[in-house]
Each structure stands twice: as C-alpha cells, then as structure tokens.
Length: 150
Image 1 (cartoon, one colour):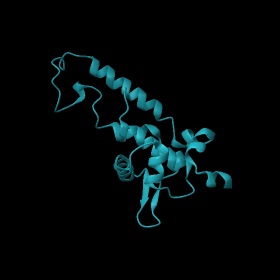
Image 2 (cartoon, one colour):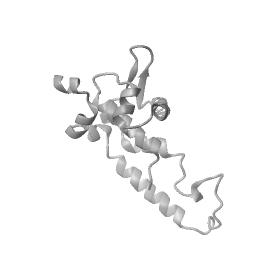
Image 3 (spheres, helix red, strand yellow):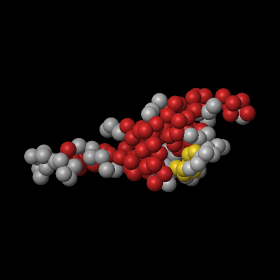
Image 4 (cartoon, helix red, strand yellow):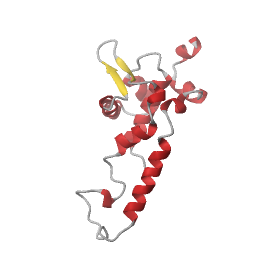
C-alpha cells in the first residue's frame, strides 16, 4: 500500500503541531522543518482544518494549532479521511476502471480487506503516541529557544 504525498505531509504537520502544542505555529516554519513547499502545505493545512484536525487563526498574530488534543487524534481516522477518495487499484475507481476482470476477480475484496486491516492497525495509534517521549522528533521540530525553556 502506498500513502499519498498529501497524507504524508498531513501527518508531518500534525506531528509538528503536537510537538509545539504550547504555541501557534506558522506555515513557513512547518514548510522548513518538514521539507515541503508552502503552496502544497497550504492545501494540506486547509483540508486538515476542514476536517477539524487543525485550527487556523488568521492575521498578523495568526498561525496553526491542533484542533483537538493529540491524544484524541487517531491516525487511522486521519488516513481514512485523507486517503478515502484515492482508489487502491484501478478496479476501485468508478470512472477510470477499464479492467476486464471486474465481474470475476476476487482480488478487489482481498485488497479491500487488507486496507481495512491497515487502517484498523492505525486506529490503535494516536498522534500523542507518535510525539510523546520522542526526543529525536522534538530535536527536529521544537525551536532551540523553546527547547532551552523546557
């Protein structure tokens, strides 16, 4: 199974916000630390805000923060909501499906079951579990000035 770039970036954004839960973070900060473009990041942040995983605050003192506590953000939910519209294989696509085996193939069901097992495993993982106690992540994501205060 391959995760889309959008979901990969979304998880990085959520982890960055969780690591900096005591303050608003900026899109440019996230882009720099997560090695992604601000334009792609803007789309991901917008989608995460629509899904209530993030809260955005506009203006000169604006920024981004988690929309709920990290312990309440289940990674399986994030993946389902972001990957749900991406077909796993051609036979899952309603419009572009040209596979001649559709009516006879049992692989589609096996793939669907495997995907559900994948998401089911991620249902046991919270954002907090990815960030809490992860010193290496904090070194990457928390600015030095904030690190020294802690």
